Each structure stands twice: as C-alpha cells, then as structure tokens.
Length: 242
Length: 242
Image (cartoon, rainbow over all chains, first blue to last red; front, top):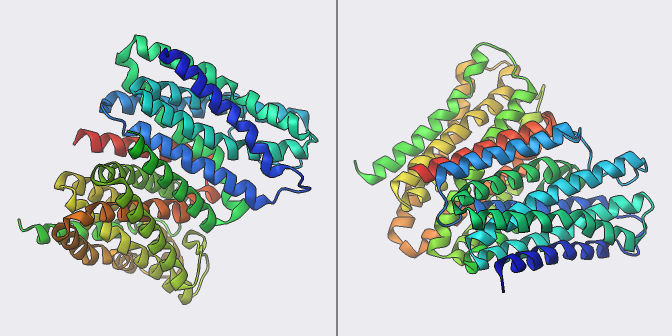
C-alpha cells in the first residue's frame, strides 16, 4: 500500500479511537476528580514516551533536531499566547459558558495537530516506527477523550455527542499527519527538523496542558506513578517496534 | 586515573555543586518562590533529558531489563519516601518551620541522593562520555536543590556557610553510592541495563514526584513548559554532540 494511504489510515484510526474515551464516563452521575487526574497522567506519560522515541530516533541529526525542538516548544507557547489559552483551566467540570467550550475545542484541535506532526514524521523514519507512533497516539487519545467527555458532560452534552466531538477535535491529526509525511518524504532533508519539531511540541504540551492540573486532582504520588509507568511502557514497546 | 577514584571524584563534584545553591543567600534572606519553582523546572528538564539518554542506551542492551530496572528505581524512590513517613513532603513549601522540618528536608534530600549516586556510578558503566554528561546534569540539578534546602534553613537563622554545608551533606550519598554502583555494573556486565534503567527510573520518578508538582504550584505553567522542555532538548543535544 502507498505509504501516504498507510499514514491516512493509521492517523485516521488514531483519531477514531478517541471515541472509546467516553466509555468510562458512561452511566456516571459524577466523574471522580481523581479519574480525570489519572487520565491526564496516562495521556502525559504516553505523550512524553512518544517525545522520547522521536527525540532519540535512529539517524536523527543532532543540531537540526534541537533547533526543530526549540521551534516546536516556541510554537506551542505562541499558539497558547495568541489564543489566550496559556492560563486556561482545561478540566472545569461545571463550566457552562459557551466561550469556554470554544476555547477547549481550540486547544484540543491545536493539540491534535501536533500529534499529527509526530505521526507523519515517524512514518517518514520507517513504516514500523510510524505505525508504533500512531498506535501510541491512538491509545493516548482515549484517556484524553475521557477528560473531554467529563468536561462536556458537565456542559450537558450527551454521550454520543461527546464521542463525536472527541473524534472531531482529533481530525486535524489526520490532515497534519498526511501532509507532514508527504512533505518529509519529498524533502528527506527536513526529517531531523521535523522529528525535533514534534519532540518539542509534545514535551511542551505535556507540561502545559496535561500535567499541571492532574497533581491537584489525584495527588502527587499516584500521578508520578501513572505518568512514569505509562512512559516506561512506551519506551519498552518502542524498543520492540524497532 | 584509576576508574574508582574517578567515579568517587565525579560523585564528590556533584555533591559539592549542591553547596552552590546556598550562594544566592549570601545576598538575600529569601529567594522568591517563583525563582525556586523555575529552578526546579530547569532541573526537571535536565533530568528528563539525561534519563532519555540512559533509557535509549539501556534499550540497546536490553529493553526488558532496562524497564525492570526503571521500575525498581521508581519503587526505590517511592519506598524511600514512605520510609521517612512523610509522603509528598513539599520541602519547597516549608516556611517558618522548626528544627523538625529542617531535619526532614535534609533527610528527604539525602535519601533521594542515593539514587543519584547510583546514576553517576551506573553511567560510568555506559562509558565515560555519558558519565560526564550525567555528572554535569546532576551537578547542575543539585544547585537548585541546594537552593531549596537553603531556602528553608536560611530564614530559620542558619548561616550561609551552614546552609551550604547541609546542602553538600544531602548529596554525600552520591560519591558513596557511585563507587559500589559502578563496581556492580563493571563486574556484572549483564546488570548494566538494570543499573541504567534504575538510574533513569529514579530520576524520572523524582521529576514527577517532587520537582514538577512543586514547580507548578509557584510559577505559571507556560513558563515551566518553556523552561523544562527547552532544558530537556538542550540535554538531548549535548548527549548527541559528545
């Protein structure tokens, strides 16, 4: 199969998996706050694991990768700043303001775009690494969607609607993954830059969006355990996938 | 130079670096909580980058063994915390405290230094270049830790010299543990991925358990995202270049 199509299906599958994230919220009056924290920590550990895999990928040139990483870190900081979301509390379970909903959707969309760069760049390294990265992002999308579903539930959204929204906010992942792969495949000189770019973006997203609120929600120790364990799992699977 | 002497010397350097953390208190009585939070964020990034290097290296020897070692490192830090009987002790938050709290902070920092000593020793098993980097990383990250210790001790009336002394004391397990860790790694070659994994696991877990949650409490998350991910990228770059 053409690698572009593989990238399309893999990233599309990763986006679709997000729908599963609403299941833990199903039939619950209140979602325990600790669950939100653990879901965030799980997503954070897997995302950092992906940043690790991209950051130490075989054949990556050091300086372009580092410059790419700086660009990625700054890009995330810049998008948060220009959208006014740098201090946005992302896990408000009882916030009904429509503007809040738009801002959450915006943050999720930009977040998914960064994941798309990761998948596309990984696909350009090798098919197995690309599939591994897409699979990690797919599983990562599930706890992330659980958090989104809990927020949406508080806003009165029904479960199928929340599932649809979770998938919809992940659609940019597909477009960005396919175009990233297409560009890097056409210009292989950009590969190290792109891998670095994705590394920096993912690392900064983990620190700014996923971890800060989790500590308050579930406590330091359990968050540290869940994040480290998820990271270790990705490191192990990455070694096997290569 | 004899390798064992070199290992002990490197461990001693990281310990002495901790004393530098007391220096700012020669000029001021209290460092702002925000500065301390950012120092923690910087240390977190350097340690994450160093751990990534260790994990990548360990995975080449054996991914399973590395992850088993990492889990052991995680458990070690966790048990050390429990053993002290004060889980989630926020040494950065201790203010106006009596002698008991001062003792506690020194104790917590000393216990966690054991795993750092193992990191220095185990890093030598992976070659002196990596060891030098790990030594620099740990020495640099020791400085804000010395800062944290001094920030508690100094307002209680301790002299700057005494703050530096206690800071260095808290890191003395580093040279003490570095030598046996190095010997263990050297004599039992198959243990190398375990040792490297242990060091990485202990460092990663410390980042998530102590450094990041405290940083998030006292500094805006975008600043932590920028600082931690940039220092992580810088650490990855240095590892690649050397």
